[in-house]
Length: 446
Image (cartoon, rainbow, N blue to C red; front, side, top):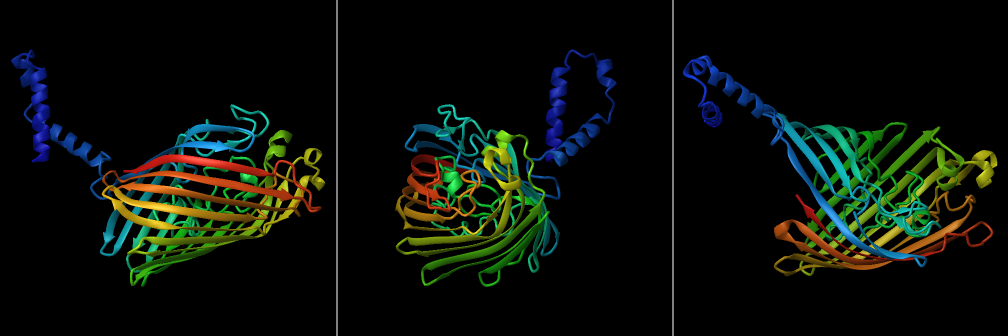
């Protein structure tokens, strides 16, 4: 009936537009014109990606998240409108699946980030400072494919995924946070890593980036397996090219009104011949890894008393192994242009608060946070691998959920403070940082 009605409507349109055509011309259309038109309509219906095709579904989801940020690093202060940082920023996700047999399905995920600002960028490109004390908010624009993979899933045996995706250890310790404040407040520095020396005091050698935690937290081309959930327990493992492997275990349950979630993971990343240095200036600003063999352990736990809404979240991570950084010896003083670093920094984070539905709008979350990063100094800060460093952060915030709009609003304050000292105990120039950071924003799901 749908096809006939569409065909009838199109035929009526053709007739209405052809009133001036003579009867002889109208007769030339033939008796099976409508059958051909109906076939064309059916073909278009089968190929239009509104809900997928006749066999594979299509679901579009995602969110839009933006915020207004005030910052003061002691040398400069300003207000910007920004996104919320890498892997969390505005995006859309295409997900689909098809049933192969009872208990078996196949599907796909395409996850595309839409960046207004990927993250603050620290450096001389700032539109307000040429002495590396400012920020620029004109980077990260455009589209970026965060994930693109297919999967086969069995209700009894688990799920196998192949393509660009999160590894088993990606976000393991973060995602147990069920407080509703995960986006504006987590143990990463992704929306403030360009402030002062924050980036270089929270450096993850595993991925050569200053995110301060979740040190294997990038998507990569990988094969991943996820087990079914048994009595709240599940395990995952993945392998990625040249070479990354990891394992993870998770548990979630509720007992006598107390929610509990725990997750832990270990990853190992090794690679050779990584350094590609275009010129001496780039080398001096961003020392490149030439080879590495780094392990990373992380664990996170969340506990909430449901009747009162009181919650506690904590996470811990530590890197193991070593990395060779390569740069221009004439500028940096490295012997033969390289230096071997021990990746032995660690970091921890706690957050506590209350989650209650005090208004008809939705739950309100009040929280306080504190974290510390020890000996996570980066290679762009010093050429002394035997240095020491410490970066602390603390903050307060409120999140208001609006259930009717699938929306969250937040207002938060965070302070970063830290420094680094060389092997002789002297303060490393440019490492002393004390940054104040206030942000107000919203996220709306679709």
